[in-house]
Image (tube, rainbow, N blue to C red; front, side, top):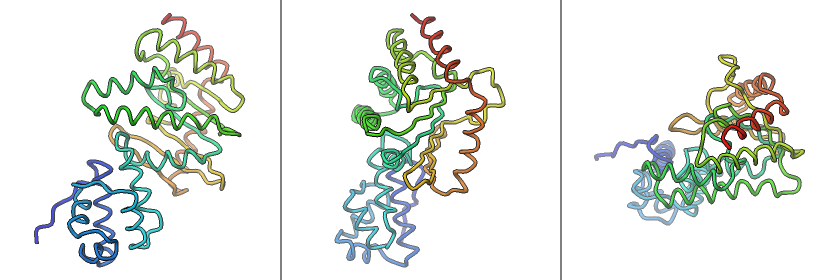
Length: 275
């Protein structure tokens, strides 16, 4: 029998399929046996495993029940649904909605939770124009972002600590008016009692403890989870041993970054320069 090789790193859909096959084989089940237990055809199981057909939430839950894997495949489905985003981000968004505290560090762009609609639209349009995403994916990104930002209408809202590399505020996105409004929004948000905004200036040099975007969630059960990104891949992590170094690096960055007052002054200065 020729078994099609899988490429799990190519997309969330491919990763779902690869993990489905791996779990099935680990349990010693054939595609026919899984089909019989889930109510799907063997051809459907094969198509999902090879990434030719996307899973549905119903399918993912059936697989979890069949394999006894809790919510593993239901969580993986969230990555497929958020396919315009990096792997792992779908799981992160679900947990972010529950968070009581959010800590984030960004490089090059304003963190999504703090973006104006116009700024976010410019980023989505740029990705669309260079062929990185399709129109449906651009629309999906904006819908997900709007949903995430509704966190701050919750009572009480989560506590947000945002550290921005200086490149975030200096990199022009859109027209001067769009960028100016975005910086004005940053300053307004920084005045809220549940938000702290700091800038990690270029002058930090090599002592900056993080080089890639990192998001840390404080959850109601007092656990901390982490989402981090490289250029092509995201990773959502619940293991305390894996989260701890990121949390330590974040705390170091908080100490070394500009104070909120100095950060707002820098943002104001950049806004005046582009007007």
